[in-house]
Amino acid sequence: MKQRCKWPGYDSVYVKYHDTEWGVPVHDDRTLFEFLVLEGAQAGLSWITILKKRDNFAKAFAGFNPEIIAEYNQDKIEELMQNKSIIRNRLKIESVVHNAKLFLDIQKEFTSFNDYIWMFTGGKPKKNAWRHEDEIPGATEESLAMSKNLKKRGFKFVGPKICYAFMQATGMVNDHIVGCFRYNEI
Image 1 (cartoon, rainbow, N blue to C red):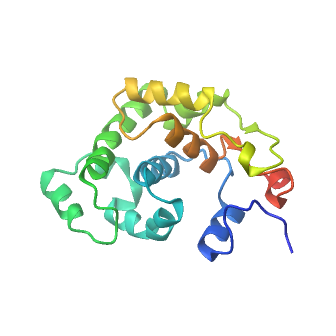
Image 2 (image 1 turned 60 degrees about the vertical axis):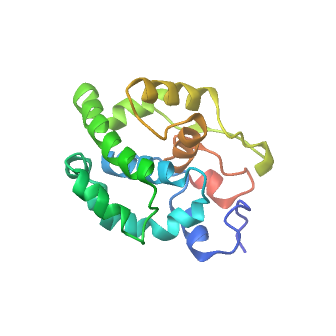
């Protein structure tokens, strides 16, 4: 049996996410936007709740296409507020539309969101060497800098802890414990 981080437990959705996605470096702008949306939606909730609604979020938010989402109007927001298959929090839904517009601004300024966001780790993943999950911080200097910069640009739901979870999810940091089979694979 493979040794893995303890946090996915035995939930098949969590295990699949851990084994195939978490910590794998992401450089595709749309996927980066997807994780920005999902991590913001997760605020105050469990990640498994978001993972189990991920496909619903994709349907509700045009496959995480920021160009389409940036055009959502108040009628579309009200429609999303009635969608029981996603997290129906007005501030979170409105933040997705708001952040999509700002995401497009960053793409114009930096050529890609990827070029912008990866500057917070010097353009490459940071490989940590945690032996136990309780050693993993909730936020770091890098996630604080990312949060401050995103907030300065007007983004919402991008606190230091959300940014660190984003960094973990998108492989900007490798926070698999050293005994986990994925640690050296990625």
